[in-house]
Amino acid sequence: MKKEINPFDYAGEIFKALPGGILLTSEAEDCVNAMTIGWGTLGIEWGVPIFAAYVRTSRFTYELIERTGEFTICVPYGEKFSKEAAKAVGLCGSKSGRDIDKLAKAGVHLVEAETVRPPAIKELPLTLECRVVFSQEQPIKNINARFGKFYMPNTAHSEPHVAYYGEILKAYIIED
Image (tube, rainbow, N blue to C red; front, top):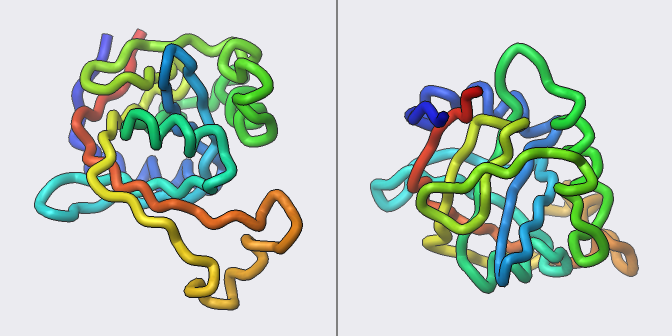
């Protein structure tokens, strides 16, 4: 069962969870992937609710979003952060979906989304279904030097991020 919500009523919970990691799911050609994100923002642009997510161009998630233009944001919510949710956030932040099925390995349960292809995740029940309305690669040369630690040459952190502005088409909490 899904309880529809206004995402802005839950902005505090979303922003509190982000630094510890939330999941962004993507799907293309029946391949479902999730990536842990610690950056993102919730707002209004062009008169619609938006979640902006940032994905490196080298990530498998980038490839899937580029194919479908959709993603789902899955946020821990409720009294406790379940063991399965913690395992999924850790695994999806340290392994590539090119190599393993991270969600199966984490033992989480996928829930069919209502308006986009990428599924929700029962164990991270606060869900935003998003369709990309704008994307922009962030040129590293234009980023303030203060943030250089996020872009180190010749490492896994040398690639730029793409900012994906996803219109929030549906927001809900998955309830048992």
